[in-house]
Image 1: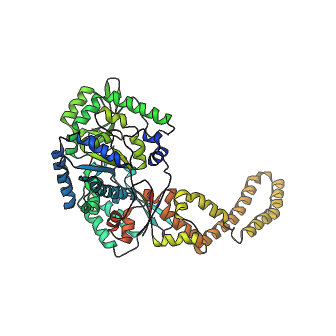
Image 2: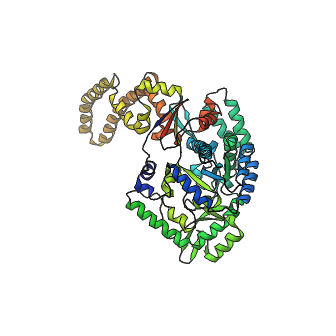
Image 3: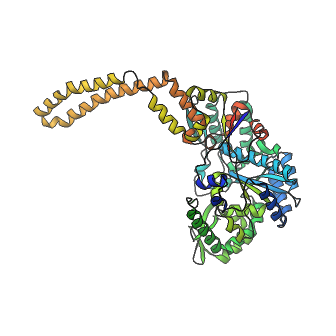
Length: 540
């Protein structure tokens, strides 16, 4: 496994500046992510902040991880959380189909590697925790998977049909076993049969059969892939999590106006620093969701009342509800980090580019609730390059940096250099010749019978269309049968820059595991990956 590190700009300007250590971005955070003194300072702060619910947290985590079949090593990590000196690195993601895009896997790899490295460097136990955002109700973001099809020249989007009624969370969505089997059959129909295929199919079918929801299926797969490396999983809607979060729900309701005000102040400062807004913050936002029946509904504050689209509540009613039924409440993109910080002794949070930009709003919000923003560590970013793709890059004369920085620009130049097909001039001559011969006849027809003008003009168009059709059909056949160069570029694009995005945002781990084995995760965890914001190119 050969590894190269390249410095690539992120699309998000604030995240890019933060990763580069620029002061105008760092001002929105509590710590510099790449300085050792940040970790010592963070540990000192955590030492002064006791976690009174450590045992209850460990009990709940142990029960859940046992239920999803997590590895004994992960269960042992949970037991270490009972010690008051044990810390965590945490990160999370939505519960995507078959683990979703590759960056989900890289986030988990980063958590495991960071926990091991920090435990050794700091001489203290650091446990990796993966937070499953099972309450996401935007089903369109999690119900699909991308994989390569048509001989590797095209990207295919496979969708798992899930119930669409109302606004339930992923953790509440049951799936149809027959639909799951259809989805898996669809996926494997496009995969090359390898020595690993049967094992992967068995894993997917076995974990699906023992799951009731998409979030459950995701958790069981992640446990099988990462449990032996000590990765602890937690799902945001679990009853024990809700019960432990109860004090934070109360505090958020009690200080709701102050919370909204701090967010608006942060938005102004971010804009003043020259960065685009990442969150749409408004004074009336309550920054919570409330479950009514099975639907997760946005909660807003209007005057002295809190409202969903169905009903209205006083603050006192919601405070009583938080006391009696905390499972009715759900955090949003702003308050979820607060919950995470309240629940866990968090040394560092492993964040994707979008999350880094969101967290820039939260420094003062954390302080409002007596908390401090943890170290926000940009997650690993990786492109996997198989041997065939490495050869194609050489044949096409493109470097991996060109692929990742501006493939669209390179492709446009490549297209411009291509010679027209050999009969391009002849088709042009024929079109012009036919018009020279046919136009006088059409003009005579119109002169003799003006009412036939529309028919005559249509006739000319049909004649030209037939020539165009023949030329286009020729071009298609040439592309398919003779244009090896175009097929090479199509394969490179689909594998390394699908839909003008980085590979990690589109392709899935299971496709690579089918060709390289499930232990590809183990090899990634053992690989010497840098945690400094650079992009990794791994040659398989």
